[in-house]
Length: 80
Ligand code: SF4
Image 1: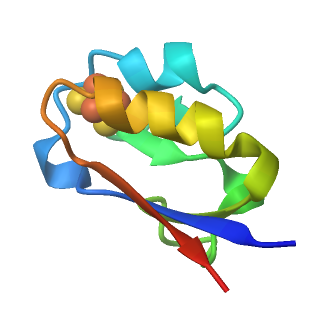
Image 2: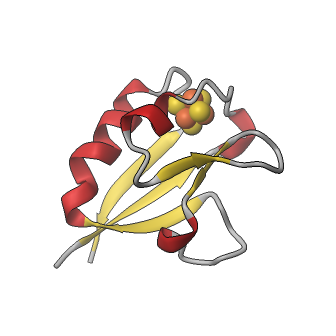
């Protein structure tokens, strides 16, 4: 099954939690810097909170967060 690659330009996150409220399965707020990050289970690299690979069934959820982020810093694409 296809997976969805998701990444966040975390430097520009304004921490309003919109992504978390729309798609808490994929996004969470970091306790370290207060910005959005990919939940640990979906990270490609455990040390990189900005990038994840999620199951295709979460695409609608990721898309909702992407479209609603007020600073448009969430991106996704279908990964092979
Ligand atoms: S919706 Fe965008 S700005 Fe808001 S917390 Fe998520 S990534 Fe950051």
